Image (cartoon, rainbow, N blue to C red; front, side, top):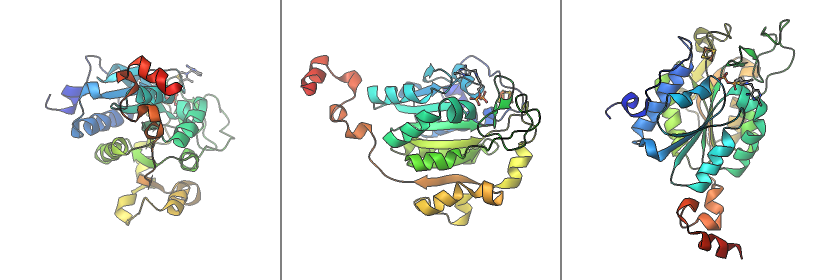
Length: 283
Ligand SMILES: Cc1ncc(C[n+]2csc(CCOP(=O)(O)OP(=O)(O)O)c2C)c(N)n1
Ligand code: SF4
């Protein structure tokens, strides 16, 4: 298996629209797994329902196609069941910041060792482009024909305030940069959240590759220190205040993971333990 595609592609071809940002994210993800020398049986990915979630069919690792908004709970379960696995959860912004927002908050609090990749196209795309929690004010969509009147959610700030120990933003149009962020998120011990700017070329004509290229810049080119929490809070609000979007690692902190603090998991994973040992710990 000499290339990421040979190693991680299934026999099923992607059904995404030509030009969809999901292709770039998918390639970056496979590159990251490949460069970390992970084998298909060492990786578990929990997928949301949606265009991005359909990657479940095309990617060869252990996998679970969850319910809409619910990619994180099965990921947490897999990590608690077998802490040796590299665990990721993949979701669109609708599922991650709408139906499943509570799972983001609590996964961050727990600091469970899961890398959460959110393809943010500012729409519910699989169901034909309705406004999602990240849709910008005034945007016209099938559910906001006169323009969106609600404020978009600041998911990065919410995530940081909830306790996320690795927070980043990536761009689907810069695969190399995104692959590096994904590698760091996987290697981080704790909850890692990457919001990925993902053009939906079919249902979001405004936030195109060109539009993003005009507002993004790379944090690492500005001597940015991701351990500075105050600066990180500022960075998560830069778009609202200055119309600029930093990409790269926004915040990073070392904190014990949830599973590291469970005495029953200290020696070995649940899946390798005998039931009588688990019962004796309960007494
Ligand atoms: C609880 C629930 N609400 C709504 C739906 C319908 N539904 C399925 S996919 C989808 C849109 C997904 O949008 P998003 O999560 O942003 O992912 P994308 O398709 O943009 O990748 C919706 C609304 C559902 N399946 N379950
Ligand atoms: S509808 Fe949008 S997000 Fe879905 S596959 Fe097409 S371009 Fe991608």
